[in-house]
Picture 1 (tube, rainbow, N blue to C red):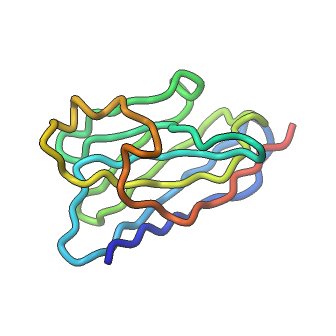
Picture 2 (cartoon, rainbow, N blue to C red; picture 1 turned 60 degrees about the horizontal axis):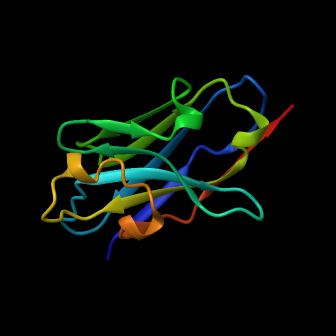
Length: 131
């Protein structure tokens, strides 16, 4: 059974930083792509960033480019999201997600940030940014 567990959420003031982590557990499971999503109250879940675990290629949604950095530690099977220059509109529950290897290459799938493009999900961690 695959399990994703996020941590690192919290409350910060605008301009502050947070680092989210997501640990993946599961017998021999090795996703080839992972991503971060977020969902604010009353809004749909949106993709924030994705990374190919093989070569580290990354993709970001426009609203976080230059402020957020996604990274992955293959040895620890852990996904990270460094969030800098946080804004109140970044407030949401943040979810990590894993995409199992598929016929299409990770690079081809990298910009696909729809919820249906990922196979496993964590429970989420709350991020609140105050002005």
